[in-house]
Length: 439
Image (cartoon, rainbow, N blue to C red; front, top):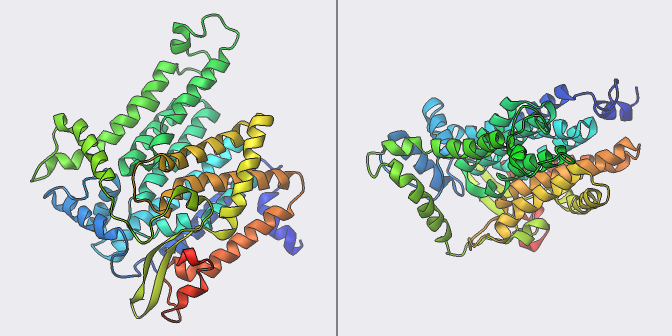
């Protein structure tokens, strides 16, 4: 076997292209986890927004009073649980994000598999996703975003399983994880309505040509797709009511605060207060940016840069320069395929990207940061993987090989500045900040 055939073997295994690459998915996931855990406790001091969320997690442990009330509680509950089980140490602070990031990577790859049934698309997506910088960096900091994003990935995994297998249980789990994602952070709110809308759309098409499809039968019939045995009304429970119940359940500890405990009558008004607090942050920040800058990867943010733990260290929240830009024409190709060829999956990826980004484009929140691009970047990697996989299956394999190799090379090259590695000196940031706007 030649070197090239060994490298490409996972993508072109025997028994056709469409054999489930489960073992390779697990291998990519474990490799990602090993890299995330390496130096996880460095820096040994709080960095960036950890200064907000760690004190809030400590308050949750003590149940004394509210802190950081502008965000839901689930992610801070994960951090608090880790502090109790592992210890109030840098490793304990960041372990939840490391585990959730790993779970989210696995779930996203499984979602791609069940959505596409394409072995090349699944593995290309996993490799590009694992080396896109954004997911890796967020998996190594005690913030809220990884809890939100990983719960969303779990929801999409269960949702694709529900559609593929026609299973009520997976539909219900999709609803639970959608609610938990919202319970960690509100960033994914625009995506929550899409599974329910998709179910209604598929049910309408499944009943095409049948009398009364717009009547009561449209809401109550169970003898039609996308999930036979589940009516549209029942789907509304799993994808509408259950997410709300899961979301509100994450507030349970707040009912036991010693000072200003939450009450049932105050639960709904509290959501409005949270929104008001979100919009109240108006003080400019050195690294704030806008959504259009995220698209072109031109305004990242430094989570950390100083001499600590015996060396100059830094953590740069940046997207992989290769895949963040290569994904943009891939999005256009997916949009074309969705419109011209009615390629449902590629069109859906574009819609998801736009919905994840439009939240910030239309959001009135004045201070925004590059890490808010995290969800949209997942769908960007999915679009790129689908385009490259399509060419791969047509035996035009060099574009996929080139992009994956370049993505991996840049990940290795930037690894020290992504993982707080020891740097040669105070001005080492210049080796990584190719654009002035990256500084």
